[in-house]
Image 1 (cartoon, helix red, strand yellow):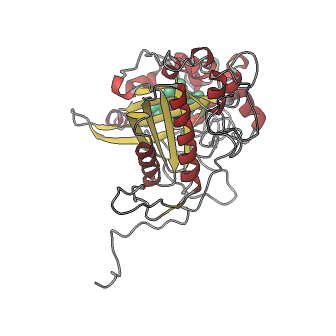
Image 2: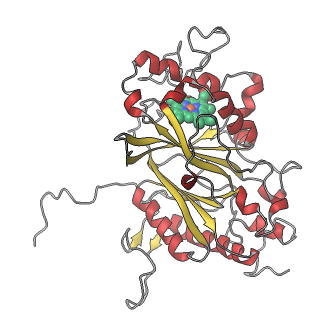
Image 3: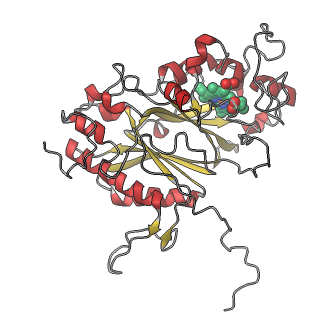
Length: 408
Ligand SMILES: C=CC1=C(C)c2cc3[nH]c(cc4nc(cc5[nH]c(cc1n2)c(C)c5CCC(=O)O)C(CCC(=O)O)=C4C)c(C)c3C=C
Ligand SMILES: [Fe+2]
């Protein structure tokens, strides 16, 4: 056969598969990292039965994630055996901007591994809020992996690699994939926020992730008496699968949509402003004549000194899953946010949002609360080492390479 002049099934071209995110660092990648076009969260039950096995799981995850984020030749074996790699990315694995971020659920700190006294202070099982209709099959988990990459196949490949390498240690509980629309950058203009499936720009008022002092205040757990030592430089991660009733939304007048959100739909500007990044000003609008008092953004962030600490870093994806039994589109927001204090940020904000007019159009159906591990600074250690060492009563933070088996 000759090669076709035009083949509609040819692989889409992209010049971006060589993009790579760092694996080593004091924080994990995938938190302040700019969102690539696709994301996937997978929650697991941990089936390890001892602390030694939990250590084996963390070391294995560390090794696989370091390899997958770096990229390289896919491992091969004698054809008499199942191939060690799924092969879905071909013989050479491109990094493709992949990040894999590990977080732990409160249930991992139950009696199984003796981790109870080491539980991050605010970590808890997600409870129902008043508008939630949580499906137990889409909630919680001992361990969460968040995959982000330029293409969805890269995350699927990474998930399959980990499943294949840890069949005795992890049981998949639920997963949700999502996307963010890709925008072409405009010369000399600030990056615009991507839109969610309600057609509004989402992410505008996020705190600046390049401001390290602000991230230390809002996102990263600091060392100190209020949290276990091992948790410093980790972050509380909230995942919520929030269905959007898009057919109903698409029949709602534009003015009503904008009043509910508190921003202009086309530009993303707050009322009284003209650009997306203009600050909403509520001081001269105490009765909510311009921005309703129950508008989503005004409840989420009233911009008062006493609510400043409830800010969070949002990193959501849009999802689209198929059709409900009632013939409606099953789509919405894979809401993800990170914060230093779960109660001070997500829980406080969600309580303020309870009863908001937007609830008529949204229904949270799944998710959970997790604690994203601190990063691994270099090759001498592994993700989760601080927790394992603390569980064994070993003093934290040795920078010298630790032997495979820590019996000291
Ligand atoms: C509890 C936290 C939040 C949930 C859950 C949530 C759901 C949710 N949000 C949108 C759409 C938008 N949210 C916007 C702003 C915004 N949202 C939250 C928190 C939650 N949202 C915060 C803290 C903020 C920032 C407020 C501020 O500082 O002004 C916006 C406006 C643009 C932006 O700043 O991102 C939109 C649009 C949907 C559709 C949704 C559930 C499906
Ligand atoms: Fe929001």
